Amino acid sequence: MDIERIINRVVARFIGTKHERDIKRIAPTLVAINALEPEMKALADADFPARTAALKTEIAKRLESADPTAKDYKDQLQAAVEPALVPAFALVREAGRRTLNMRHFDVQLIGGIVLHQGKIAEMKTGEGKTLVSTLPVYLNALEGNGVHVVTVNDYLAARDANWMGQVHRFLGLSVGRISPDLPEWQDKKDAYNSDITYGTNTELGFDYLRDNMAKDLSEKVQRGHYFAVVDEVDNILIDEARTPLIISGAPEQAADLYVKFARLAPQLTVGKTPEGMDPRTKKGYLADFDYEIDEKHKSVSITEQGVAKAERFLGIDHLYRAENGHLVNHLIQSLRSESLYKRDVDYAVIDGEV
Image 1 (cartoon, rainbow, N blue to C red):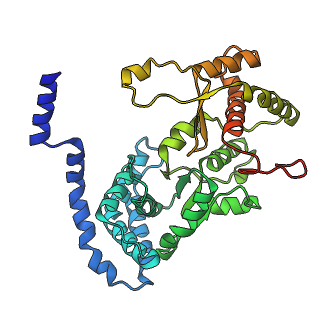
Image 2 (image 1 turned 120 degrees about the vertical axis):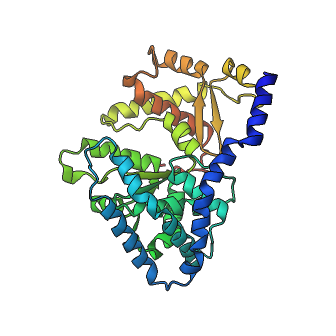
Image 3 (image 1 turned 180 degrees about the vertical axis):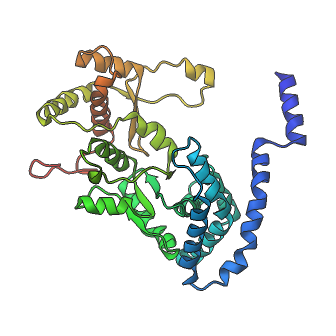
């Protein structure tokens, strides 16, 4: 082990850490973007949509020989977009300065490049991750297949669509938002047909399920899935992903399940995994409580003990079988209601309705 550490130190000293090597590879791109800043500052406001149109035309020309049926078609798309990265990022930086009085710092440009590459960028609160997202979102929207920005709740989807949408509209792109209160089917379809579409993971997910149930192609609202930027990726792809999205009928049966899980939830005990455990101890740790809550993200995690209790209560052998997916959803929601949402604080019951 000591020899391994010594080797790693030697390699890091002469070759650099992976982080340092990644930054070194990005550095020339960063220099090129910065070199365009004087040119961008000299543009008139009306020039920005024209520059966007020109970049779209260049990408379209590079895609003329692309084969949509080829296995590497996505790679062909990326190859067509890549040459536009430097001018696109330079345009977005200047657009951010003019519309929001927010100029992207070099570290934010690096974050945008990393996101464009399909990687995860971890940033602390206040470091401007929302502004960072405008860079890869704009660049990939130029291809014409639409970009989705996935947020954890409707408030953030509305805020970002209005706030960061100013940058994209200034650049000549259309911005739409998916929300539960969209009145008409056509409104939702129009939102998806925008260059950039903001929405929550649940709304986007349920629309995907509904599209797969459509009897005719004209009934579908989504137009495909080309590129997405996911906010709070750990929450959406790990915590929220534990709750399946299910569209089902039989409302009478569902009402019975609400009553059943309302009785089950108070019988389960909440607890917390001890902090600071080493990986080996954590791997073998068996919780003596039934579920754990995350107040920040309004999510719950069920332990093995909690699953066993739920299975006994429901009279089933395996909670996580495919046919029991709706039961998992009911269990998660009932525990969230029990432990995270307080009456007359998070919700109110008026005339028998929540």
